[in-house]
Image: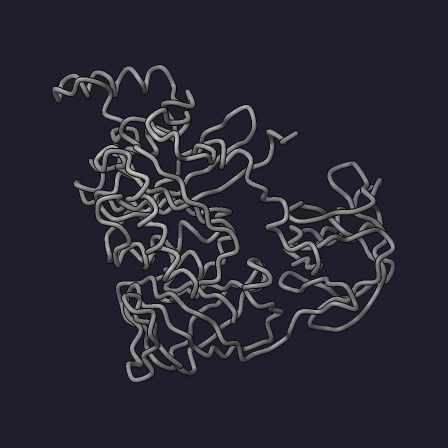
Length: 417
């Protein structure tokens, strides 16, 4: 039995005319996830434009008006619910120059839907989006081979795309890749099973999203608790209470566990785990809790409580895969603010090791510049040690962002290697 409270985040990626807007519209329309007034407004607009039926792309393209007015919307989020699950869709624009938007939208996703036009097959954009999905360690990739109605629902055309995709995806680190032949326009295999493709025995897209096993996507082995704040209520009821509040990043903490506070290295045992007025025996990711320890240790925001026998690496020199998000290029030896879990420090980019050519996936060791949408492996030096895991093992403690102190803009997102 699936828990309706379970939230699945997925991102959609495809080239400009692969039918992303139509697919999301179809998903919302056929799963009855649209408010009556929204539906009425879109039906009226479709009529005005002379369409026979409802123009499904209008469900997501309402944002185009804002874009045309010069209001930049990099990633549009859509929310919908079915009896089996809650969903958040991060819809990212498909143009080549939007690598940064896909990185932003996909950073917390459980799954990526990559659209491929059945007529054109795997193109450079497909490779780019798949590579970013792999880089961001998105556990599940669903390749939707769209516009099957334009190739007469041909199984041969479907298999051809699968072969093309598998040929290059063998280099990627994605655990779970699934293929679904669809027609977003006609609704084949989106919410309802297609009568036009009886040769396809798999589930439609919505059923795949509803039943996909995602609880194992969170790292349950490495117990990590970044401290966000220290609670000292000083009330009569909690006179001597000293709790460390935050969100469990990964793993499981139990009352009585021996833990170590980093970077100080002092150890203690967990005395209690509290949520509001309730005490728990254990806490796990992504719960927000307050924890008390048996000993009075000096712990403050930015420190991390971990299991004594399982510690992250504590280092001031970190190698990361960095995606540059800003219009302005990176300046060598400039100090940036670095944010890692609840820890804020200063940092600088010491060295650019190589840049990735997203067209060929080759490494370029000659070019040492960092411009918008570039993805590079770099060495970063921080003023104080950060407690990091590799991003492949832990997406929370393995990710960082860099902020320009003068403009307060987020200039880069990084994944610890």
